[in-house]
Length: 449
Image (cartoon, rainbow, N blue to C red):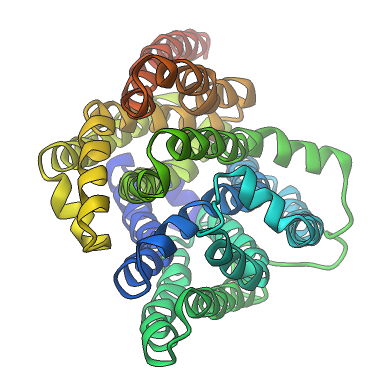
């Protein structure tokens, strides 16, 4: 049984395990880039550097959004067209994805470089934290393109039947980063500059690995001449599906800007640092869930394209169960052991105290998030761009931003932290209603068949 036939016939539980475990490992490894940087910077450079790094999150999220637009959109389309037996279309998607990645990166890197100080100020940087943020981002610019290539084409690698190689892509970069971080930050005494250089080198290694894979003649999907010219239908197919996760990352820029400015007003640099720690921990948990999403996506997309809806539904529910276990464990740990998490990043007593409150408040309904994230990825996997975009924006924008604008005026700093669990709760209710409707529709299609 070849790699694509497995997606149609192998038991979905084994498929989800086969694809999700490497994806989770790969995503966790990817998250280590940020976590390791923040731990080393917090412990060896200081709390002001942690806050300076926190104000770069929106800019990195925006770069990630542009990369995700292409990477996730193309991988979802690849799964669907391979399920329908259209290999030439998959090759066109691969070539167009490369062209889009290069063009997009060239544009946003130029803009970021020119307007870096203004952007960092807009996202909450103070005179104290701005130098840290500026040095980190300007040094990281080449790494942003390399990250888009490594992460985006890693998704396509998995979608075309190579989950273990996709995991190896991320492992390679993480090992390089973990080894180089202490050398550049501590041994060479380069501080936050060293962290950015280490990340650039690590992402270069991952990008090289993934591009080498798609250049091999014996893989199921590879680069071919005549596929790089942008075609309107191909680009629209990529962008329409990739828009949902891309908008989530782009929306994070607006959310982070509002959060950081509110925190600066009500709590100062220490509150921004606490947000950095809270977001890092919760993002690590969401990263595991996103790994499950990535493992689910080829199975759901392929079987949707093949019309095997019973396999699609079972895969979804297995993914929801696994994701909920992750967010439940993480939520309990965040609520009951916040100081343990905070001390991993800093030894500053004030920052630990601020982080304790942030984690305890923001993680209280976090167990719901697994269901919401998996459901968003489900709609993305079957090409339902509108529903995926709505669910993506519901948690990060539609409900969270109004709460962030209103609650701090009522409760001050506590209102900023309370906005997160309230938004998660309302978004989960909306997700449940939409999933009920979608499964009713799929049941009707199954009866027609």
